[in-house]
Image (tube, rainbow, N blue to C red):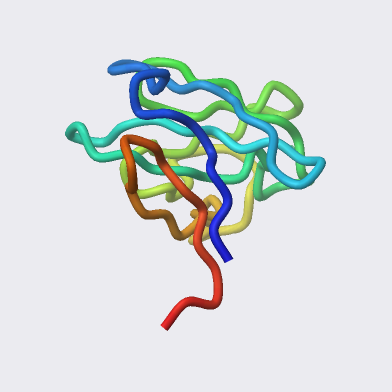
Length: 102
Ligand code: FES
């Protein structure tokens, strides 16, 4: 299964942008120019995430996550918590979510 997330031309060089994903939201952004996608879900109690200065920050209780690794930096999310990253590929100048392909 492949689902287009965003055209590469619409993917910002800095920060992130939110796109719909099966009735939920994901953040798409670049790490060293390479596109990446994570669920817009805090690993504490599921709050939304805001992109700030290289981190995703949850406004509910202040958890902070590194944009590169997805790992928790600080806050009430469990020790070792990591954001949910989606498998993606680039094809035809767009970023696609992929699932179940060999
Ligand atoms: S839900 Fe994100 S810090 Fe609590």
